[in-house]
Amino acid sequence: MIPFNKPYCSGREISYIQEVCHSTTMSGNGQFTKLCHGFFEKRYGFKKCLLCTSGTDALEMCAMLCQLKPDDEVIVPSYTFVSSAIAFLREGAHVRFADSRTDNPNISAELIEPLINEHTKVIVVVHYAGVACDMDEIMALAEKHHLIVVEDAAHSVDSFYKGKPLGGIGHLAAFSFHETKNINCGEGGMLVVNDERFIGRAEILWEKGTNRAEFYRGMVNKYGWCDIGSSFLPSEFNAAFLWAQLEQLDDIQAKRRHIWERYDEGLRGKIGNSITLPELPAYATNNYHMYYLLCPSLDVRTALMNYLKNHGVQATFHYLPLHSSKYYQDKHDGRVLANCDRYADTLMRLPLYYELTDEEIDKIIKLILKFKY
Ligand SMILES: Cc1ncc(COP(=O)(O)O)c(C=O)c1O
Image (cartoon, rainbow, N blue to C red; front, side, top):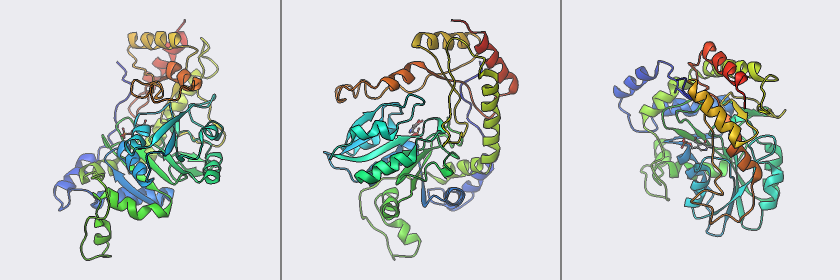
């Protein structure tokens, strides 16, 4: 079976983890954590980075930083992973789900604007498959209504919008380094703070509600309890693993690009059964996180997925709509989110990982081209 995903290892992970074993810091915020923070801050100009134990944790920090009250509303796309919404629900806010665009699964200013009212405080955008939302329009809308923008950049490492790195545009952003992402450390994530007014509190939330960061910088002579918070920082073992990957980022991206382009050359203009391929907006780059097909119906997708499975290829669908989920359907306001439902029924992801060989890609392409519905 060609699996959907194989987590990547650069080969240096074990030696960096051994270094941690022989060092005096195994908990968080040691030398590897600082190397990872420095990498992102230098390469992408992010103002403040804080590694977290998952993308979900990074989103929870974002939600805590927004200081939401029970009547507050947060706009979140329905076509996303549960974490994009849960983080804000846990803070007591009401989530209003937005539909996806017609041409890709992202949300847009046009879809967001009708949902804004006097209770709205935050817009969460998800750059699906690492392809940017139209951030100029969304940031202008947020400015007009004094809203905070949180970028769920879980898929978006090393991707850009009009030359600006994703995760560096909204007030806050969250990355994921889960094993399915381009860069991984098993489970991991990162908070990015772009708006300086959140930096001080972000450091405190990260360190269990204490001002330990100021203490380490020699700004106070002892540290204590200042706020709520949690243990969001990962151990040095995770950071060491992640550092081994970050060192190889360009190589990983080049390999993923090769795979993505081989799929695209093999399929574009040749695929039948009314199946369509992703289109990139002119303002967005591709970080080759995902290659997906859009089938004309759920039946076609089910048939294609089963056919590939029977021929040894594991392709997968993606998100189920959050607005009509078992947990949220009673809390949703009843609006039909037709594009979200369509992507949930028809989008299918192909295997894409570092070790995927040209022969395997060609086998998958040939199978798809031979598929008849
Ligand atoms: C859009 C999106 N946001 C958030 C997350 C959560 O990230 P993590 O699994 O690192 O907690 C995911 C997970 O895949 C995701 O796809």
